Length: 234
Ligand code: ADP
Ligand code: MG
Image (cartoon, rainbow, N blue to C red; front, side, top):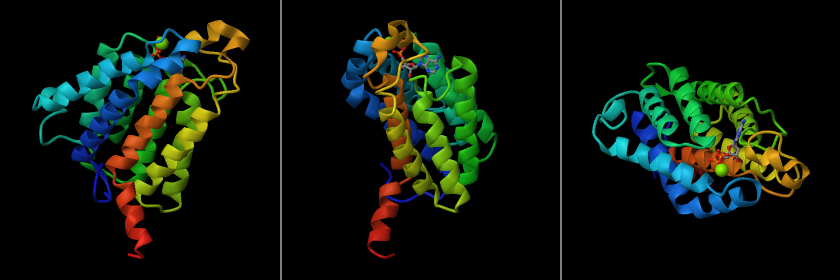
């Protein structure tokens, strides 16, 4: 977690984001897998953990794929992580999360430090990539139910001139609400859809992971540091 609020998403912040996401997945892997038990095949935590550990290994291997070196752009860091997720995770979530990060990285282009509007556009591209690949809409009880409102909340905050960390915190909050909204839904995509009406009453595991991803972004950008400063009247 960043002790200082960041004004832009640079390569270092992108790495911190991915490290934070990997740490959250490692910590919550059991919970993610438990969520995947009633509606899936009990492997979501295992899947994402395999992928994020591979991302960490690439970050630690200096210069690997442009992700681990001291330089590079946030777009390169996210693109490399996305490719790693696609190639290491067997389940549906690997290609979906991997595509999200690849598309976000591509949208950032060569920019060395992305401001709130640029991060908003990257998150929008991530959502579009997930929707194009998985063809899920809001209400189908998938990760889209968390990602779609999160992107909208980020965009709204950015348009209102909120600092980048605060836009990310708003996105994380919307993702949490979106994940919770999957509980009463009947799943219409992925393995959970095989259960039909019996999929009702369960929180979608991928939606929870999206909440972790956006919480990690807010933490990496130092949203709490910003709030602490605001609390002191600074
Ligand atoms: P698998 O379903 O192959 O076992 P995981 O368990 O790792 O893969 O991931 C399951 C999650 O993937 C679901 O909770 C859901 O959020 C997401 N998911 C599955 N299919 C789709 C889809 N078509 N579109 C969007 N998200 C999906
Ligand atoms: Mg599964």
